[in-house]
Length: 191
Image (cartoon, rainbow, N blue to C red; front, side, top):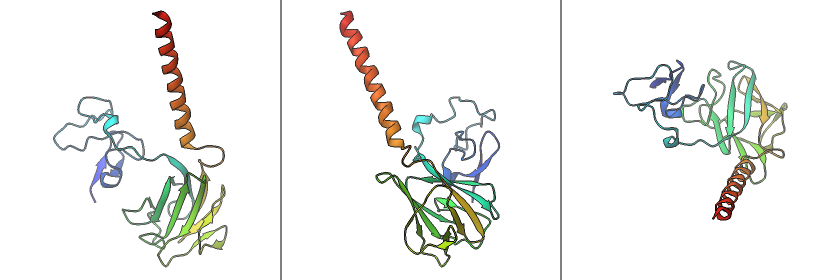
């Protein structure tokens, strides 16, 4: 696995994260023939942020409270998030070999219903929510305890009843439209 070093010195997989460091969100030029800007400043050799792949915004987190990754957080994005140890997993848990390599569990954020669900994966490993085994989809509540392998996590939601990214985007678009209308009115009145 090839690792890339960001301007802040963090190592990460460019195959998984592209050219954005998952720790500090700084862009890294993956071209081998360009000198690296170790200070992390923008210059002509660094990619323009508008040209970068846009990720879905975070909808919640899993925070490891017990196990090899204790203290680490994992982002839950919109729609399906497959959890396992392998490189291709949306949520990759390293260090706990009792978690299946692929699809131990699936976390789903449904933006239409504003709910986060947990589905058992297609591996042999079980998943527990608040000490109960999960055999079919279950809706998660804030601070639910989730056990996978030898690790224990807390579910921390961001999106739901009180917040939704689509509302933020709609409010921003309405504000822009309002400013545009006001400018057009001002231009019309000055003529």
